[in-house]
Length: 93
Image (cartoon, rainbow, N blue to C red):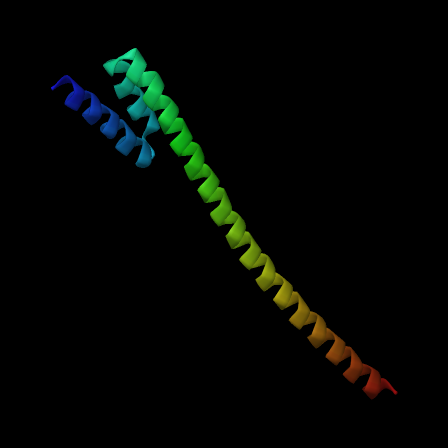
């Protein structure tokens, strides 16, 4: 019974962390006991760090897509400006 309670507390803490409620997760662990608190807090911190890395990678990928789109738009604008300049040069001559 004690082990099931321990696993339930740890699983609850992990679920809270995944919902972004890490402060509540840590509070529950502190109330449960020092070893479980230290062990599971370390686990939660690792999981949270992994999530931040995944989020950062996703943002970087989105940034690359946006940069490519901006580059394409700038190239199109450059081509259009070059064409307009040529037309103006022809009309002036």
